[in-house]
Image (spheres, rainbow, N blue to C red):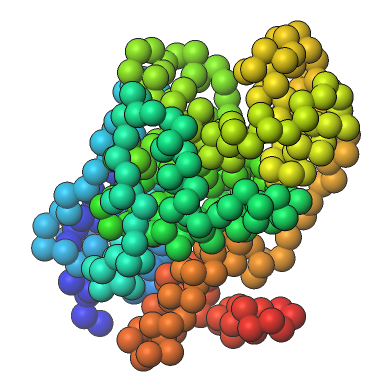
Length: 386
């Protein structure tokens, strides 16, 4: 059997860039079938993995497109320090392996978007072309202009009455303006999401395990980072923010203020009754489709409540949420795919397939599912029951 014309140098680069040893790769693949010695031999070029083994390496181990292993030279690419340049190296270097893996996955989706769009933009209009900011940009007119560009009026937002609905609607608005949005279960709730800037394929990646209202906040926080022409991370762990200084802290504070102003416009909020009561917090939370904590934070920022009261109520609500939380089995596999990838991306993939421009194997690759599962997925997307 003829060996695949794989570049062994690229094979080794893909492993090292993931921070894995040959032993780690063997463990992931299963040492009974693939030993560390075999992985090492592949990287010398004396032997090569077969096609199924290469697929597993590409998609399950290294999070790289299959084609990259046939490149004549090691590809140049940005790394976490380049993409997250608005964060100090000490924080970027300390990112957990699971978050770095998601970062690699996001980079892979950017490559897929480029392939599927033949190098063209995902939308005729991209909001990151229309706006560029720094920490001195006047916040209020910027947020107003951003909302106008997204095409969501306060009356429309007030009609949602649900943070779950808000996530869906804001995501649609972002994607219509050229920002691709993907989700995943981060399995680490210290991180609410991150974004990767690219002139053609700016991307936001959200932790789907967070509350819907937090996901909405993350969308706008990361949009601000993109308008800085940089990648960024939305940290749920407040301890990380205490490590930031000077420019880094200024950027994070600005992104938080931007997110709040876009979701809860100051002029609108100040026109509504600000009665200090849980009933009123609930009414305003429903009006803006946000959490009660976001509303109370606006009260605190305006000096309507003090720090002790704010902390007391937030702690109370978090305790209530823990009691009310029901353990989930993770949901339906096929519905999770739609939630994680989004309708726009999935429709793009199937659109290319129906145009006979890609094969079913390509569809499976782009959607990260097995070929045998595609009919069931397609049935679900068409409205049938999987």
